[in-house]
Length: 165
Image (cartoon, rainbow, N blue to C red; front, top):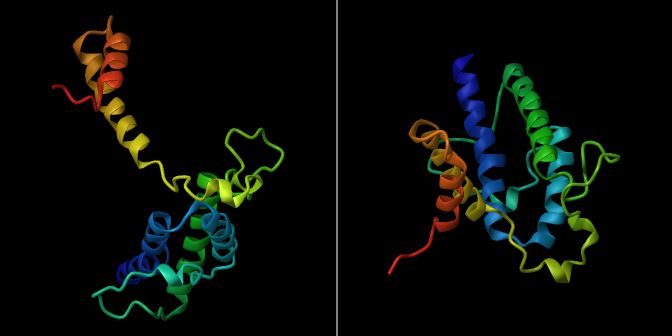
């Protein structure tokens, strides 16, 4: 059972996770408008070849075949869970929200013309990096001085990344 899980994880990472990360880095937002809804639909159906153009060559052994009913059942559950995660993470922005009647809290990129999205970023790594600093400092600020944590955190976030001469 454990060997099957490890084999499945390597297989799924090779065919879905790593190609997804590679695609997000290499493609433009208009291309993601086509790739992500298709990836969501294919994962719901248990297909993992949507991102075959973005697969990175690996030195690990044979990652092309799964054998056995257990591995296929686990793959089916894994693809459905991954499809739900993709829908939660980017469904509203790319036109396949979990609840179409819910209030839109993000820009619907499917309604913006492709020529306006060519230079739009496909990831928010810079913002995530800054928020991780905020998270670390908020934990330590509680211990330092409970009366001034808000001002300290605000000042630290404003000055974060500023080069001092």
